Image (cartoon, rainbow, N blue to C red; front, side, top):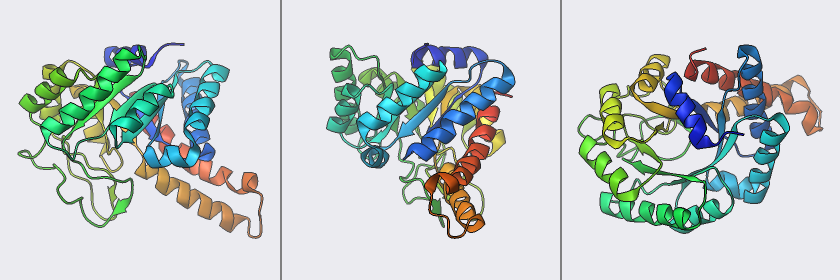
Length: 294
């Protein structure tokens, strides 16, 4: 089975991005896996996919349980399915994720000063290298809000103007001093989706400038609410991984509500939850096709 690093090289060569979809339970995890398998079958080749578990999602699912489930699926289907420790808030929890055999780990110190962010991120990188871990370490620079939710307004303090987004110079410094394998700069993206209206446009030119300067794969967080046109342009500019969470959560809730409404009085989860899986698969499939130019 190819490694995540190898899949990222494949994505770069083919000018596509790997879809990253968050999960909190088996229902959501199944939706991601089934979508990747279905799309791959349709196109005749294996489409890599990443399943992300944030701090809260890992606490809910269980770290060893999440890793075991994803690893078992990758082995059973002989498919490039990876697991990411998403938005890990502390250095210690990031180290724990490295030890737990995640394919990638995100140390999220984006709210800290550049110096403190570099210090925390570098500590995780050094730890992973010292353990000879294959885990790719990702760092973030620039605050884009927190939480996958539908919002009435943009997150306060989010870097969404040209003057506030990640600069090329700071991005180069961050990657050079930390040694990260993956880099997630703030380029106009925000976590969550606006209840009314569209999310801000991405700064495509800045993405291209940063990719050229840092030389490592770039990751776009806060993908929910981004336009298809911006996604396509961002991938062409150098984005290699795109995160989707809020869209999935909304589909999960709407699908579950439909499943309950269609079967009033039903108490068997396996008879109700397929509606939620189908709703999420519709979102995931659409995104996988877009990210892979299908």
